[in-house]
Length: 247
Ligand SMILES: [Zn+2]
Image 1 (cartoon, helix red, strand yellow):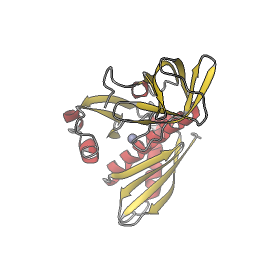
Image 2 (cartoon, protein in one colour):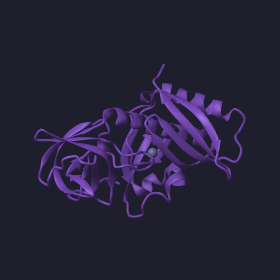
Image 3 (cartoon, helix red, strand yellow):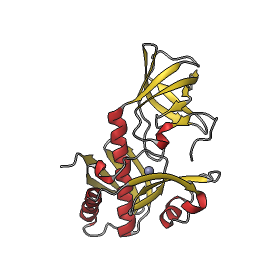
Image 4 (cartoon, rainbow, N blue to C red):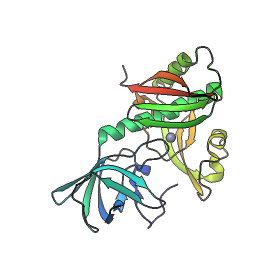
């Protein structure tokens, strides 16, 4: 899942989710967007929406509204009407820190929720999505057990307080799929051509194949409320969560 060397954009956020400013060179600039040689803009995926931010070059500012990814390029999408840096321009990139930091907490919260529901109820998530500090996760759950919401919310907050480490690493495909939770959840989701799989491990709780950005330990998530359990029909239930600062 890691970027290939010498092809397209080097994805800085995959190795360092805390990076917020960096130097780069514009490789291409067209109506498709701006391509940098090095970028920390998360291009969206796995339920995590793209980052926003800014490029600074020679006293000029280009606001970036979002980003998207093709097989080997990350395209930054400028705010309409912004000045565009031509290919070859040296730029300084910077992310909207509030947005990205909130998305990291939210994405990690969804993995933590997934781990609790998988461990305690043996349920697999069917889809997930998020905005800063709000997330949703769908489960195949025909009937909601008595006390489900209270149990899950309390247990999630206990696991946050336990301050489990969140470790990101790549491993060979066959090693990743030897992990039961990864095999059950992701066998059909990881593209067949990938020889290495990026794993996000909430140590002792949850292991997922994932390309997103995460906080370093569960306490950084803050507080988690399950605000709603919706019935989406055909046995699907949607859990909606909201994060707040730890009290
Ligand atoms: Zn994820």
